[in-house]
Amino acid sequence: MTEASTTRWNNNIHYHRRILDVVPAGARTALDFGTGNGLLAADLHARVPDVTGIDIDLAVLESARAEDPGVRWIQGDVMSHPFLPESFDVVASVATLHHLPDLDSTLTRLAGLTSPGGVLAVVGLAKSSGAIDFLYDVAGLVQQARYERRHGIWEHSAPIVWPPPHTYGDVKRSAARVLPGSTWSRLPMWRYLVVWHKPAP
Ligand SMILES: C[S@@+](CC[C@H](N)C(=O)[O-])C[C@H]1O[C@@H](n2cnc3c(N)ncnc32)[C@H](O)[C@@H]1O
Image (cartoon, rainbow, N blue to C red; front, side, top):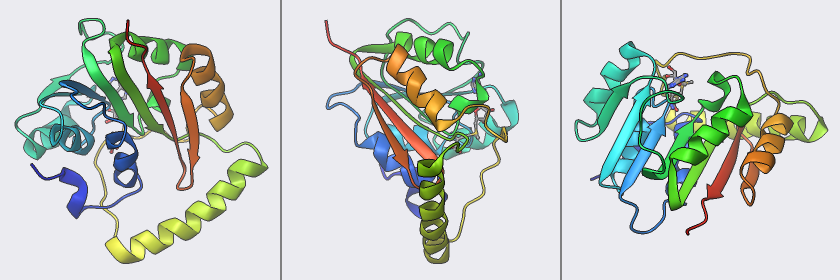
């Protein structure tokens, strides 16, 4: 299977690679929460056999269904949908964490869905709040202009929340509290990456 995002570009799709790169060898199950148009779920499905995409918004899920009929598409709230605990080898998302107001309880819920030996990988966006963030934002402007000239920009149709309620620092501190051993990276085009490998028993 080819990856769904190879023909389209925006700064969410751009960072799919950062998630795909940490999928554990032999992963069997994956969850893309806040799947939107379903591109990350479809990209995961190119390497993981059993993929679920969940989104609370019915309209955007219709477009996701057309993206890959082999993914299990669910309309629901990732916080309350009755998934089995620890049932996903990969729990991932792009640009969704800021839709869920309480960082600690959301990360706790996602960690609970991740199987032992599995990975939680989140690309998100947050509010800039200090000099380092603003330096990243300037670098992002330059980088995004270059990519847009080369690829154009693909507009998604998923609901958005703007401005994001948390700062980058808030997310970094919450990840350190809830996901011990997780790594945090600030990414230039208004994004961050959190990766947490759940210890195997
Ligand atoms: C900005 S969009 C990102 C969509 C997609 N991941 C992308 O990269 O284009 C965030 C998505 O999260 C969904 N969402 C928000 N809260 C949710 C929740 N509690 N459970 C599941 N999906 C949720 C929204 O409906 C929206 O489609």
